[in-house]
Image (tube, rainbow, N blue to C red; front, side, top):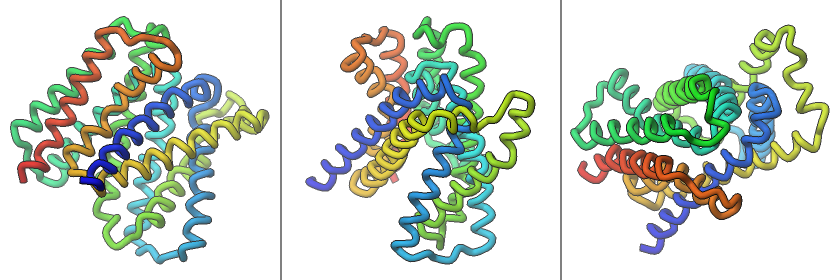
Length: 298
């Protein structure tokens, strides 16, 4: 029971970390180019992981696995991270986090289409509730930053979720026989290289896509510190939760990010959530719980 309690606490802390990250990173997303933010986040990740691999000892990665993981990084970091920051610029932090719950639905869809998996009725019900919860949140009056630009922001968020789901599906088989540190390094490298190659073309005629970060080093440093804390803190705690807690429980607790966004906004910003957002968040979390419940039945 002691280790399971540790896993439960880790899951809740991970959800809180990601929720705090969405709130803390939003001001940067509003001011700086999305590709520049994704690139800076990737470079920092490469440096930290590279040093860790040098300390623990580098391990060989088979050529086929390398290129699959590299392509997975292009989608999961080069595309998904960039569009996440674009969505964060146009929508409220809570709406973006709520949209990310659709990743559960997208991943299941990939498993059904490409891996031939079948769904039980609880999973179908869970999918319906997740979609319903997201719809309830996004069709409300919402926060001021959601008004007017929501269709464009929702589109960015949906493509980000889809790209991440495809990325995870691609990487799943390639992870066998590859240690986690090396796999993560290759994926991040794929994202960083794709951004370095493609970003200049996207920003052609609109100035240097990295100049806003390079001009003000204090802003870049603050962003890197926050991104590192959120990414590695949230990621490590989620792995700890999955190790010590049944999958259905861990997955459901990890999906409580929208509720933590509302809680943080209420406690630290004195902004009470409207009923529609709260109900939509609860419906979405319940849906994830039903999707995850299959692991308790097999």
